[in-house]
Length: 90
Image 1 (cartoon, rainbow, N blue to C red):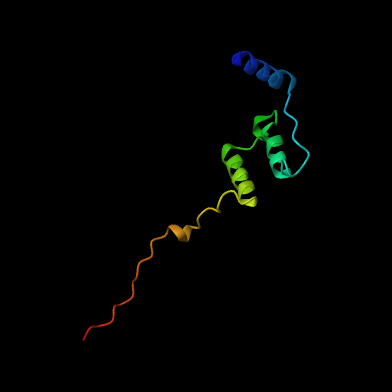
Image 2: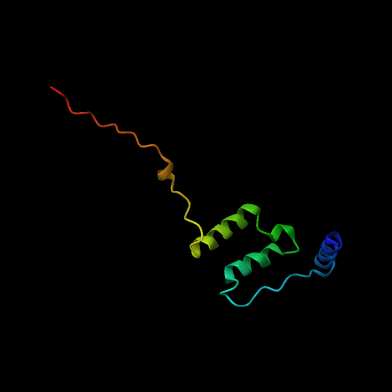
């Protein structure tokens, strides 16, 4: 049963360029997400975003709605070393 549904979906996408409707309500689907979806559906593969671009876009969208924290800054991963000279004990 599932295979026949998958085959039908693949047929509709490949032959008829069928796509799901993107909700018009920005509260349901932010415009940036709609634009990302549309760019992923380009028929010319060279016009589609790379996986890294999709990841960056999705992370940016999630940050905008406060679902994930911002990435750590390079300094947060740095090891700080105390190079000060200790006071003499004399």
